[in-house]
Image 1 (cartoon, one colour):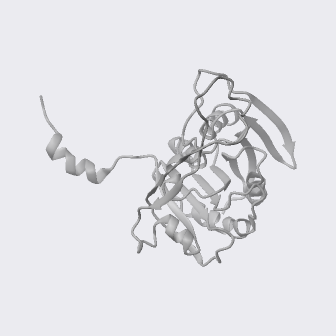
Image 2 (tube, one colour):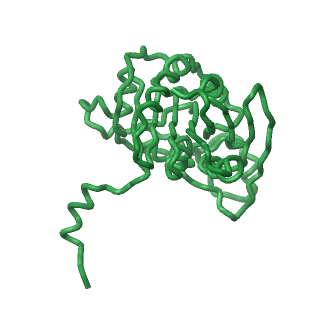
Image 3 (tube, rainbow, N blue to C red):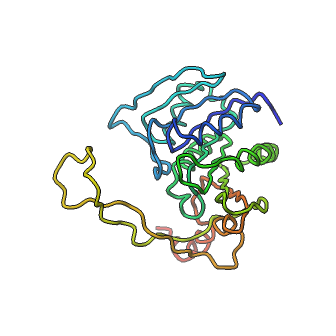
Length: 269
């Protein structure tokens, strides 16, 4: 396992979060670390990018104990784009690691995740990328199980990285209350949220600077759509006490549907 990697670290919880500080400490033995993370919380941004309708503020925070820290007032995927354009002009970044996310990115949460959006942006550029999350949402979450087990997991992934482009890995750790049983390679589980919008009864936020009919907050409850016996669905593996590793691809084509639909719909004019 190399110890001279050029490592880019980002997240979607913002540069000041506890999770990203824990990740930096874990990755120190593996090479040179550059942190470029969002200025503020950017959860739910998926692979959204900050386009040219507004400028993105950038702040170089300097070198702290050998690690270069900076923030970008933009989405997680934009942080990766910025790093490859401005910080690694020769695009010599060996791996992008996103996290440690405060909260689960399993099942369809993957589709919304800013953490995995940043990993996907790295994969689009042919760079190995790993998103790592802990199923605990508190700002002061206990990351001790992640710091204990992720380094060996990281080494094994890097030593066995596939040759094809466009791959990233979504690593989730179960809640700390669930005893760990091991590690399981999984597929993305299925489910969806219902009753998602609740009426906001608190004070009107200062950024709401115009008259509105109502204020809502997004919460909801999750309905599990994966079969009960599907222990390799990532959210089920987490419930069973396993660290889940879900391979992701930038290719969103449903190849089975491509084969089915082709003979029906292909037409030559």
